[in-house]
Length: 65
Image 1 (tube, helix red, strand yellow):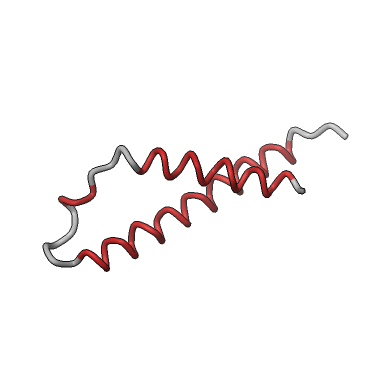
Image 2 (cartoon, one colour):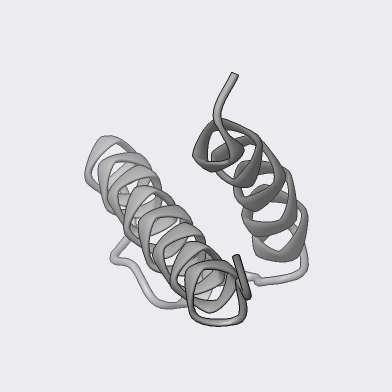
């Protein structure tokens, strides 16, 4: 398996764990639960992608081989 797969796995765990600390219920309107869930999911996917790309680029930049 590639290093990027493990970075995606690691990033997913870290992002989901960190999103647990955020109380986003106050941001959304009442009775807009499905839209809030979609927004939360898309935000998590974007954060996972950004973190994985950053870590992989950092890994590639510091590789001396």
